Length: 235
Length: 314
Image (cartoon, rainbow over all chains, first blue to last red):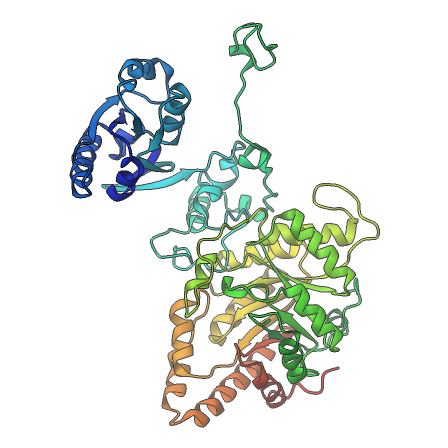
């Protein structure tokens, strides 16, 4: 899932302090699961924001809340269309995808991010989420025993571990496990240590952000005349 | 070992002589005189001098520029290149530029993570973006391509080739310790001609690591130069023992530094320890030289090398 973290109330307050009517929009998917931008969190943040605005003499600002099922899906965003007209600004508590989906759908409404979107990851233990996938577009997990050095090594080293690995921890800090220690342990367990003796080749980053903003195009799924190669106006 | 690039370090090693390299850290400012001063203080004590590349992620004069200043002052540099700050385009461009300036030795490293720059008294740049387009072992193979195949990593040819005497680091006592031999082998397979190691204080542990390398047939394929850092206080040894991965300092050495009554006695003890380490390391089969460091105190290196009986240099 996409993991996001909360922003501080003063930052949110300063984003909207010049508007009179603000709608906070939660999202019922990933950010609900990671307890940052679902209905419950948006309710709590709404109350805190109203109090915070009051303290700076902006207590008359209307701050309302609502949550939709998925901010990354037009079908659900449509349900917001009428309501959004009633407000001067919106704070989206979706991930960065949700914020942009709303911004594109509502071009006349100032749109602000309610969260800091972090990564694609997993719940590691109660209250702790960890990054697992960098979305590099060219998955090499098969080379690394199913554990990703791009997402999980502080130096994205393909032929690790570097000299900073110590007792299973990363040189950056002891809260970070050295993924190379984990890769090696797992290789040994699987009897596949010899696979790590081969030089892992440089990554082709052209499928990552380095190739420019990415699109996945599935010709077999495109509707005739509406695919990426369709001429302007044919639709 | 046949000579490939004609560097002095390569010559000394190919003649089977015990090599000495020393480390020279570039200044945090732009003054060439600082480099020249350091160069003059260590001239003649080593066969080549490593010039660090923004070590501990603190911005310093570039390794290439400082290496060129050393070269002009009559010292042979080993420029260092880390993977943290440049992508493969910048790395290869800098390697070609370095070669054009006459630099012939290069040590490839991952580089300390940028958070390290804020670890001490300095601010560093912990908020910077790191690059790590390729890793240090991939960099070795890129350098071999520039040298042996006259090819850039992307496949474009260069004319003429850019031959370097290629170095890599080895931290034999860092965990996971049994994988360190495999990683050394990967570095050799990728193109390393010589190896400089993390500082050795645990002679016994290092001897065992060298035995593992020897058993894997690695000591015949590459020249290993173990690192020795001149200890100057018990605090320095304790710090390295606790905070520098791959450095294990036996308590006995810390006790010896602690029991020295004053600064003079401490320095004397530091020299004694370093000389003992060098002598002990020299006896280990497979060792081809020594890499000496005196962090931020390069002026002490001549005395160390002299006391270790490593002068004059060939």
